Image (tube, rainbow, N blue to C red):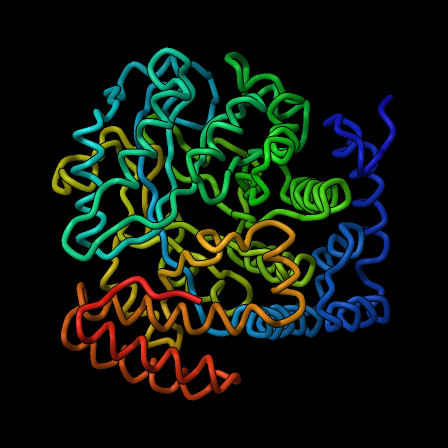
Length: 473
């Protein structure tokens, strides 16, 4: 039997089944201890996070007053580190060819009803121009696992194509990559290609359940998949993004597993995950989530988001268009810092908007355009941010985290958010959104604490009005 070791590089030691069960047993025994809950909340107010054991205990508490305090603290911590900025991105699906047999994904190799499609470089160019015409600056590349159709060379060529395209005032300034677990050598190639964050969802940390859900294909190897972030870190990619697919296994187990993974990365490499994603299982071509017994209801889901924010206060948290506008609104308040907008989950879906989403990986619940999402965010008092500056200035990994923890990042993030929003307003928004956006920019500009930074931001905002682009701190 494997023994728990947070700095081991063996999956079953740093994600240890017995340790998770012990953690959940402790949390179950102490979930009615309101004095302990208050102590955990007080510790959370120090803005230094919680252990996975403490976070699990807080998550399981059913007391209504404590739950409200969890939401309040999640909101407080998010505003402390991230202000009212919400980073915008879009997924770009390159190919749905896949050799795995994942039972929850329509890309699985046995699905004979889904049309298979792989974008050519010219088609990628057209997709990117369509995304640039919406106003996007940050993409997340997605592709099925298929060594023949989607080799690493294809991914690298696609990244090069994306970065090369300058259309009108548009450009993609950061490409995050969500592809299958691979080798240290291939991660080095991705690093050299200039990717932002390497994202890989664990799906579930429960090894036995993982193996049932992945009966065949390269992804069936639990250890190889779970140790992927270690190989990426060894290759020099210091911004990695974790996530589970809530609904595949008991949410409590995966919640602990994900925080255990974050703890492992922090202890082993000096830097935890740059982002954590919280997708829930959605309907798709031949997938019916109601047949899975571990669905997560909305009230529990919100608590997961808020407790994650308390447990890992420095980590960006991502929510896609899988969720409804209402769920996204509620979760933005208590922890989420990045959302997608105007997303298509089908291969080639941005150019062929009217086409049936027959190649989609999952159904989208929030179908609003990017412009509508930006307008909505401004109405809610948020600053939609298209900033990619930290990655381009080398502020990644522990360098980014040290700036965030010290509060210095505010002198970069707030002005960068305002300037990239100004670009969006000038180039892509409606007149109504432009007017509302200028108002929130003026309000937030006055709140930049450093006078020198504030004055320079003001100058750059005028430069953007005169047609210049791409300023950053």
